[in-house]
Amino acid sequence: MSKTVDDNAPLVGANSPFFRIIKKGLDGLVDGEDYYDLLAEDVVFEYVITVPGYPRRLAGRQGIIDLYSDYMKLLSADNLHVHRDPETAVVVLEYEVHGTSVRTGRPYDNRFVSVVTIKDRKVTHWRDYLDPIAVFDAQGWPQDRRS
Image (cartoon, rainbow, N blue to C red; front, side, top):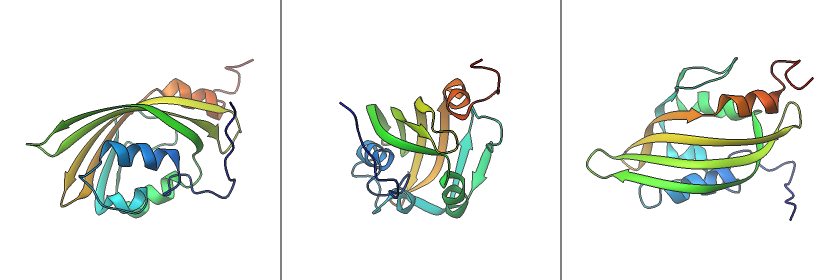
């Protein structure tokens, strides 16, 4: 079964597969109408495993909005596993995303582990682990990899 996506749909907005799977994983712990609403103004993101041109650390909601504006178009997200520690307000989310690279149009399928800290019903810290080879393939890095 093929899936279609509105080309004008936000990449991580309220109707995106990414927002829906994250919202499901953080159900009852955070408030917000779209992904960015879940984030505290001074949220800190750490990308433990990253790719060329991507930061290792980024602070502030606006920085995340700017970073995600032209990255990947997600068609679906699945295989969610949630691990919660109520004493530390930390949630570990394991999930997969599927879509295409905005830049190349190539398929994008990746697995993530996101370690999320919550305070006052907002995400204050997000630490991501991903498969960088999936990003390389979707973005066409290096140029001769698929030759």
